[in-house]
Image (cartoon, rainbow, N blue to C red; front, side, top):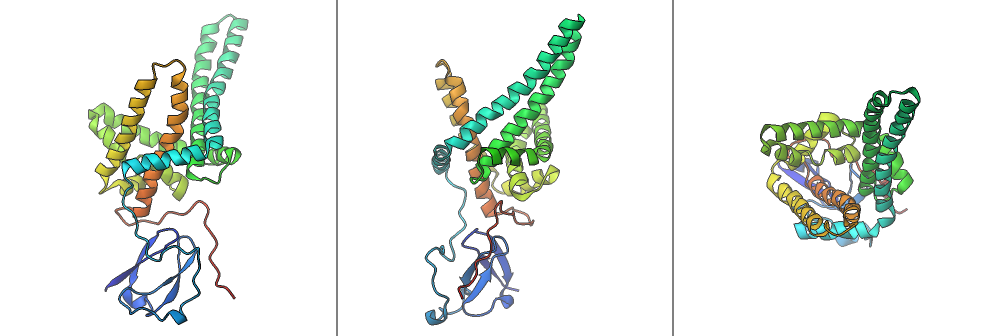
Length: 307
């Protein structure tokens, strides 16, 4: 049975329906993804009578705005930089907070262990246990800070406190996804290097799948792979372009005193934005295999017809 593809001009969600279910002439469609309404007429029907059409809305985007292909590398860098310079008051403090959450939780157990070791005359025993606790605390704090920064990149409406709260709510699923991705990449690198690089490209979007679609664990990795499937080389080329530029900048400016921390201060959130925009392109194109559509972070209420 022939099908008609309907594309929501608000969220770019595409939906294929049987042509028999589409009424002739102009009708109003409610998008099941974002809840907004928009006028639609089958492409094979004659042009509808404008007198019977709903009143135009100045804020309504074009009816059939095409779903874009992957953004070119140069445009990705430009858009990433524009987003970065527009939100320094949130992204830079969150990056510094992530550093503090890495250092302070590690310093406290080490200091306590050293103090007990000096008091009880066996510093090495206590320092060994303190080091293990410090590593665990530092890993937990670093993951929380990193995830809070990632949440601020994904949701531009979040402030610093909101990003930290969102990061704490998603921390344990994020650690599970991160552990799985690290396991596959590290295992692939140990086997023959190339499988690890392939896994890195396949699963780069697993963290964004968790934050935007609420899918965790192995399902998040599979979802990321579904997005990349059929587009491996374009995605790999864009990721390689970013890491090449990051390596070149770090090499050229790394010899300057105190330049290292400043480079990291910029490259870390910039890299998150770059990969987020790349994932957004893949999400708009949709996965190469059937699956549930992503759920927006802040779904908008349906547009009501004027009385």
